[in-house]
Length: 164
Image 1: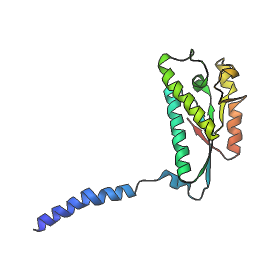
Image 2: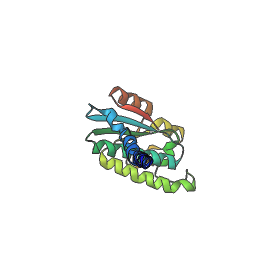
Image 3: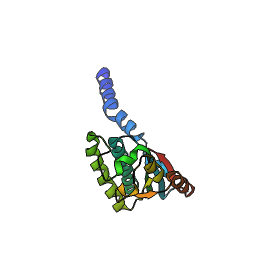
Image 4: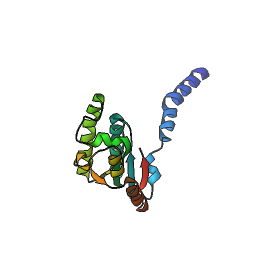
């Protein structure tokens, strides 16, 4: 009888109590923001494929939604530079055929962020480096002369720098 009781207790602990303890110990990353009413971040996107750029935009959107759900004001800036510049232009001829579906998703994300009022910038230095004319970028994007100066400006205004 004692053995059966031990088995029942062990079963209860393994299948009911241990998972409850483990799940209660999961960290809510938003908890790290206690005593803050908002969050300011500059996302520096310089990924080298359309799929990577698109994934980073999904992550930014997820963060924005998490912040909003928790009642925080999210103030985000999205900046593009380096090879990511090729995936935020109007034409498709400078990218590989397999990147085009992800590029279409990027275009939709940029429209979404523009509706949310999130500024989207393109580094003019990168555009110049890759021979991309300012008018070639998607309409949601503001081409700025120097993306490094913009990052510095926003950091001095309290925005966290998030390399992507």
